[in-house]
Length: 108
Image (cartoon, rainbow, N blue to C red):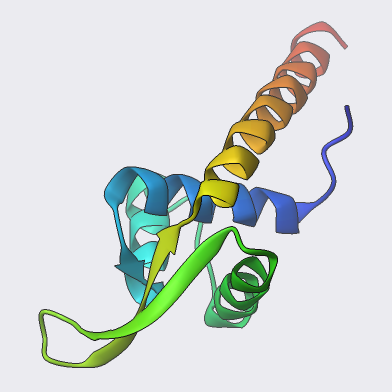
């Protein structure tokens, strides 16, 4: 199984964060990825919001406008049933891909 692209990795990160942390707005997703990666990964708005929009169109996430804890309107994203299935499939693919890369780094 081939791992497709950085886009697929971003999808996997977004789905994982929202599934495990619960409904979040875009900034909260980006902040969680940055914090969890100990600043190794940074998701720019120009990548995050198109990815969220695309994932919403594919049915992996749903979104609704709500007021945040700061009393600001924000789109809050949740993982859908289809998104959970996608997350499971992409997690398996990522695990296999990263194991293959690790083997090459160790053995080459």
